[in-house]
Image (cartoon, rainbow, N blue to C red; front, side, top):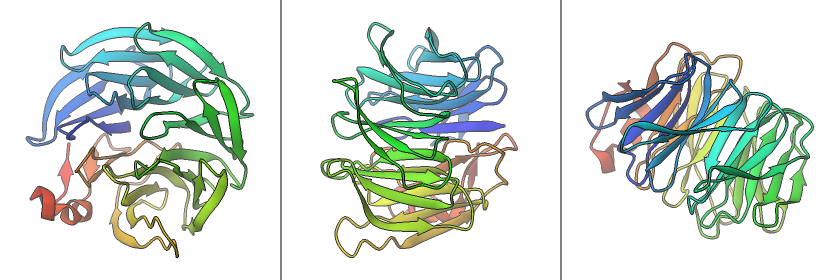
Length: 310
């Protein structure tokens, strides 16, 4: 089973996939070929993330660790230990100096990437932390989504809690900041079958709440301007919506694509970096799928068509 996928910056040339068997595979998107396999400790990989420079890859695992991999040399750099339960989510800061990890132990750890040391442990969630994300363009804020139904905002430099958004009615599986403008727009997808939007500066709910037939398990804004929002759901679909940045804030469904049945716990999806506008979705049948409708939506700029299965 493939639990997580991520495109490499700056151009999405590589795709990383993390599996239930503990391996991480690197794929060449253009040739659709396997480039390398990083071998772990046979513990499920729940999250993968490239550093903004694309030279490092981080993976969060069931074995309570985060592993750092050198993308260029295809080698293991270091294993970060500190969590007391599985690591659901990892995210690099835009400046590449910080790494955040969210865990089953209800905490978020902030790591110094150069020294590979823990800088701080954020405590405050009352349940598992399933998703973490840094704000754009400078990473001055860190968002987290949890099984306690809340989205929290943290200040990495002051190592403090900024605000708690508590309008979801169930587990928050995924959080994502938009790269648009000052990066204040934050989206959250929940088990309550909604996607909500927040202004991380005014600390208010903004726009309409998107209601869906099933759980929303992953959300991601498309670089470089956040004009599209991708969402993955338990109803076996991936949707692309246009994102309005002014009134009347109506989120129009641009594309909907069917996908394989989802596992009990939502895997992580990824949207292409920079000018890419395609989404890759993990699957319970060990495939990584870029749905055909999403590729057709991007055909005008990429020249591609048809589903790609890795």
